[in-house]
Length: 55
Image (cartoon, rainbow, N blue to C red; front, side, top):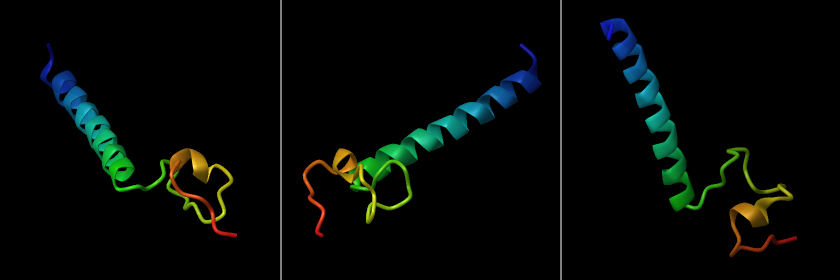
């Protein structure tokens, strides 16, 4: 295996792992997955099933 290929593969793996860890952390803290806010989102009940929107 070429060293360059290994390094590039490792970088891609680390970036992918960081993205997955961030998404899991956001889900556990109650944040949605789209990162655009839930104030006016029609699908907020899908991200936060236990919460209701105040109108």
